[in-house]
Amino acid sequence: MKYFVCTVLVSVLFLMMSCSEPPKEQRIMMFGDTSRNGIPFSKDPHVVSFKGEYLMYYSTPPYSDKNHPVQGWGIGVARSRNLIDWEKAGEVGPAADYESKGLCAPAALVRNDTVHLFYQTYGNWKDDAICHAWSVDGIHFTRNVTNPIFRPSGAWTAGRAIDAEVVKFRDTYFLYYATRDTAMKIQMVGVASAPAGTSFKRDDWTQLTDHPILEPRYPWEGKCIEGSSVIQVGDSLFMFYAGAYNNDPQQVGVAKSHDGVRWERLSNKPFLPNGDPGEWNSSESGHPHIFKDNDGRTYLFFQGNNDRGKTWYISNTEVKWNQDGPYLPR
Image 1 (cartoon, helix red, strand yellow):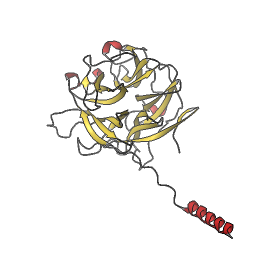
Image 2 (image 1 turned 120 degrees about the horizontal axis):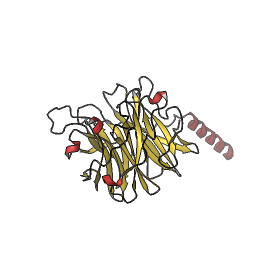
Image 3 (image 1 turned 180 degrees about the vertical axis):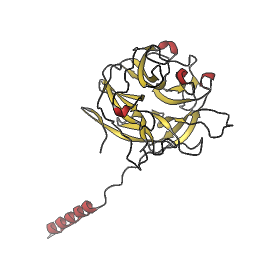
Image 4 (image 1 turned 30 degrees about the horizontal axis):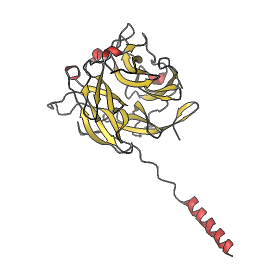
């Protein structure tokens, strides 16, 4: 009799568990900085883990107040403990003549106890270039005295450099940047390098090719490849990049390299497409950043909107890996 009762109880419990509601979906990150013009507007995310918290650097638009003492684009800094909830912690504004018209598109890396920030000047068209600054608290930055530290040269490029990404691979720092052809029509990606012991000053960087390492090829990429974000997995590098100009729609693709210079796309289709009509990112899913957490899990941060760029939000999604490369869980 005791055995019968126990069996019935187990069966009832199993039935209750089977009929219970499924677990709630995980909360998704939706960050939009409203501090400059009263509407959510954050672009070009880059995240690091630093001194027990996460710091996210992102582009902020010009102030709607035309009389504000700070003009042009800037770089916002937000902090988080869980990669979902973010609180603004500061801004990186212009501090030198070469960035007086604005600065944006940040990329960061942590070396020892210092955050190194790479960013572009903005508002100078062909003359925009890559700059560098460093910080021991992740908020307040000191400029590299040799800024701007890089712009490309050669008959293949207009000389502009934006959307910096700096990664260390096999004792070499690789600087990936977006540039345009001489007609300023086609956006493409180039690469430079610096030795492991670099202080990231201008003379340390060597342009590695006289041609783009990635340029638009497939219809979904339009006339633009930009926003490179690179991660090492095993002995290979994987580049998450943005294809097409903003709201064209911009979407995310992936390429792979064994040496940091020669790249091969993993697919002729987007890895992360824009959303369906009515979704928050129906206008685009763009400017990716692939972030590896301390526990080894990886997250793809990206920007999106559904109103053709009147607002911009930053979100993220976890990326898994198998023998073929990255994939998005269903």
